Amino acid sequence: MDSLITAAARALAVGDPLGALKRVALREDAPALALRGTAMAQLGDLGRARALLRRAARAYGAREDLFRARCLLAEAEIALASRDLNWSSESFNAVCMTLEKYADRANATHARYLEVRRMLLIGRLDEAEHALARLDPHSSPPAVRAVHELIVAGIALRRVQARAASEALARARRAAGESAIPALMAEVDAARLTLARPAARLITRGTQRDLLLREVEALFASPLLVVDACRFSIRKANLVIELAKRPALFTLARLLAEAWPKDVPRETLVARAYRARRIDESYRVRLRVEIGRLRRAVRTLADVFATQRGFAISPRGARDIVVLAQPGDDEYAPVLALLADGESWSSSALALALGTSPRTVQRALESLAKAGKAQPVGQGRARRWITPPLPGITTNLLLRATLTDV
Image 1: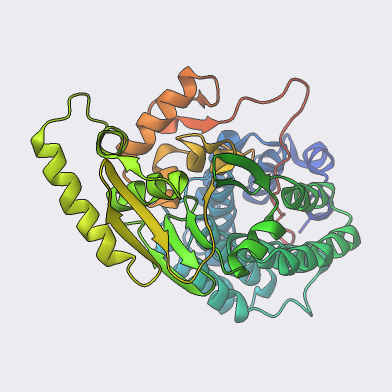
Image 2: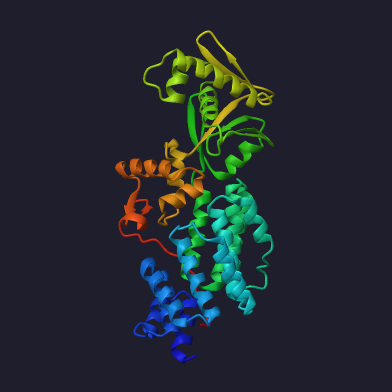
């Protein structure tokens, strides 16, 4: 290994991609191509980075399994940064096994954290938590500890555990400071800002106000009946009724909860729940059937009953009903919430993370683009979606150097 390759790898390890490029920018050998690819990824040119890493993998040849595995790992990290989440699990596991076979523990550990971050992005929280429990960060470098705590905080945020998230982010900030990697410190700081932003909107008795995450946590622990439009569920304390797979029932429940203690006319329920322009007897029959299903689904928490002009809901054992909606209560708020991380997402990755169909996501993105809330980058299969950037502000890309000893 020559001195220039060693110096470039060390520059990447401390987050200095320009310093690395100064040493290997004109070289075409496999180690230099790999380091150039990682440097370009840290600078945000993900397309060029992917091309360089693929050239490096080909240049290493079939006999140099370890170095090819490192290139593939760097490609996987670029895929995560560009929100291309349709990985082949078998191929990624083969990369991890190769790294472990050659006792490359640093990169093997990094690969496992990469897979956990992917699980977190697509909402597989239980799997992410179990995988994270098998990783011990205490003997790892500060940058790895920071990544570990970021994942812990991410899981806590999604489970509405504000105190646990705050403590994990504080530990992540200390570890990131020890690492002295600017991009890592920027990512931790951006994550900490989420605790100061509205996490949801509370709707009750015709009034609305924004809630922080700690206030949402307190609301979930209260004896109130909460119709949660963020997670499509109805809950009171620890009892939760999931309606994510029954959207029509949840829409009716939300309409009734927003009107409580008043009732909702049948015409309003049909128009809002089924988006019907003309209401006929078939819609009225459908409404009666769906109300019956809703009554059975929520019978442990609330009563749904008919009134002279429509239907109403009444909580059981709770003094009030509140609705928890997305901040801004935008129709496409879940899509905007994912785009808000500042990274570019493909429509297929958004569909995977939201658990819905790609066509549904594409319609949402087209509507958001018309409203100026999202914008496409690229064409065809390479198209990605982002929120419109603010003038003069660039997005920091966190991509750790995984080829520090190439």
